[in-house]
Length: 237
Image (cartoon, rainbow, N blue to C red; front, side, top):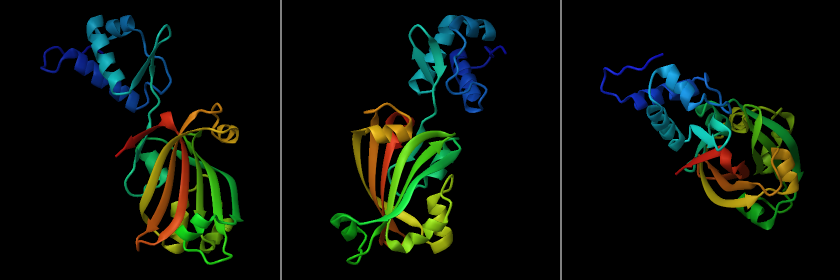
């Protein structure tokens, strides 16, 4: 397992890349404790200075988390989310190497607020279809998601939306593709009920993303509100 000191790439860089590959392919799983600097030094026949420099670089890039008195651990991979356009949560998870999932909380027709009725161009007396789910990554809750649609989408009552992509279901039934959105971002703190759904302490920081979403024709088709566990995501602008 020795590194190659006959090439121009510095030893610390070789070690950094080798450990990074072991993290990416799962040989060093998220949450596991990394061997000590002494153990790595012996394993790869390099100095502790070389090991420390490699670990520093991996820590800076977010691959490792150092816990004083406990050791160095493999960091949980953050879900990467772009803020432009519309990206299906399931696709977003798969791009980061996670298996997506969903757990239904409720689906119901409810009276809209005046703002919701205006945004969705509802006729007087029309209701909104509310679909609320907890989104999962590798079985762990990451997002509390509430979507609101016009009554046109009531066919969703007949669909099993557990572990399903809502957008793919809608595309299959209606041929609707969501392409653009207007977003409002805000840091909020979990209520007691939100904390129970997400498996986090009350008042844990959440990133709220409220979206008004258009289809390919530029028509506003639904409203979205996602409460994301803030430290599970990396936002890309």
